[in-house]
Image (cartoon, rainbow, N blue to C red; front, side):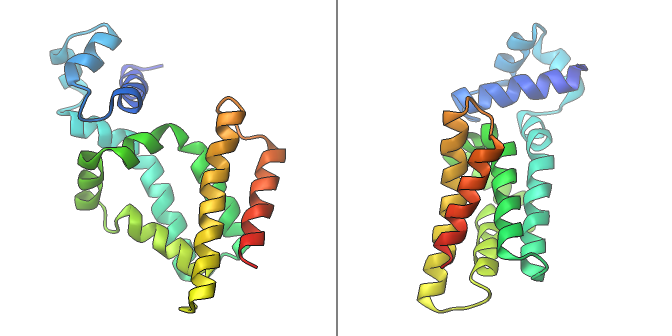
Length: 177
């Protein structure tokens, strides 16, 4: 593993355990076995480290939201893609969801906030309907996919088995009615 990849792996772990705000460049450098000055050679700031960690997952989420907005995905394909996305980014969820500094950073750097991207997926699941019943079903399906995946990962030691994915997808689809 190259140095940049090591830095990102260490930072991802520290951010998940200590929070973004609770982790310093010195913490990352210490865990890497180097100095902060050496780390600054690769990344100018802690925010740049966070950007590098989140770049790929956020691009994938934005792409999923865009595909949802386009109406090109059916409910099963959309929920399946969302389950896979959630499983792949599980370690980053605590960093993004629990740290206001990270959420603010994302909101200012992204064309659409994570909340707006989630709303695009929910709107697609509701099939563009504004009826309260459809919106409730769509939110329930979204929640079943997200929380079901998190529960399955916790039960499966961080891995999502094909059997658990199938159960989560069926449950989310049932929520759509």
